[in-house]
Image 1 (cartoon, rainbow, N blue to C red):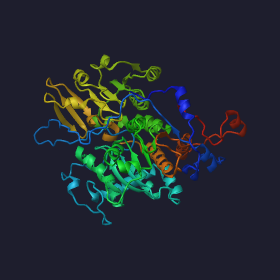
Image 2 (cartoon, rainbow, N blue to C red; image 1 turned 180 degrees about the vertical axis):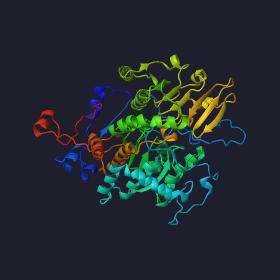
Image 3 (tube, rainbow, N blue to C red; image 1 turned 120 degrees about the horizontal axis):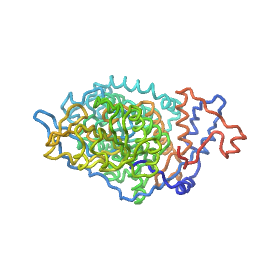
Image 4 (tube, rainbow, N blue to C red; image 1 turned 30 degrees about the vertical axis):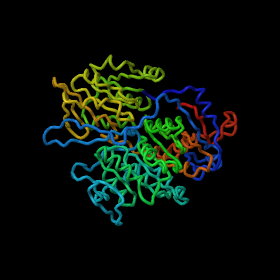
Length: 550
């Protein structure tokens, strides 16, 4: 259910797999070191940037959602709009804030039924309202102020245009922070077409701002299931334009291209995936021998795992809960399912507020960590009748079942911080005997015949991205990592990457971290020649082996 610790010997064996070393893109943009005496050379970066292919054992065959799966709407009261929703299992863990300042319900007309043109006379986009572009531009500018490292990378590399000729199709959260990444890719020479990986996280004004400057965006907040797949198809299927790179968050875009456009898929030069769900799908394809292009696993990079998952969730989980429930958490009994990096962040935040926190986990190592951190490890059924709040953080399915939902006490809050929208068995709640009542945006009361009600947030989708915001600085770390991964795959000489899934080189992780240290006025200690020789390290890194657990 949570991040499992792999066998050490296996990882060392994996880490030893050699890949041809050649000029790496990151060596062109020397790291922004924080020590005055540091003189890391481009050659040092080049010799260290070797990606490591990984083969994680997977027991199950890959399973994709149907292209268009029927999805019943929950009962609504007279006069209340029924909300359409996507059944996609796309990732909703990394990315950016979902809180759009524009109410998507203001205009009932579907964007697909509108004819909109930006100031340049272009109509190759589909957003809620292109007139919101000016407001969205201000949002992007504000986000850019907190993403100084990504802006720095843009300034260093835009003269050389390392992505010139790249045609990137992306499926991520479309928010102000993601817009900074998209515009960075454009500044580095790429052509981009973009759609949303989550039906609730799009900031309409940001989508409009991107469309105004020429980025073809197909997304709006509150898409239906059909809209979701239509937008993905519009991004991929354009006459005279064929993508050669994919940036995905959840695997839905990769799946769509693989299934619907196999000819296009075979010509893709590289896939960059940032979510655990999407990475799992890629490993499944690789194991089945169906992955015909190289792919970069960004989700398991240190900068993604520790910062986007642990530190980000430690702050954003409270933001999402407070905005939607206004509940005081001191003394509340909380169950966090999964004690991986996301679970650890959630538990730390709730414990600090005085909550009584229980942990469920399948992994004995994670369970022991929870015990040592002062949490009680239980089975969910042992405490299901007494808890006030349950948070799923596993990436699994049916972690909370209908039987357990039936036994929860009145007023229990149920939400998800894991990747897919399958952790809570929400589908089982759409039955005639239960009543759904929308009390505010992303907050539903599910009412039983006896009057008991539970509070379901974001219909079981990712809480922080659907109901609140995510710290921009953390997203700068992830966005910088994604940009470097795209540059690396696109510029890699033939033969460096096979048709497999690769981890980011350790040196690239360290480079991303070094770009963000000046924000804190941090100064690294340097190894002397004698110390470096004693440890068997290059003075400029990498400083840890690929199997090292931070």
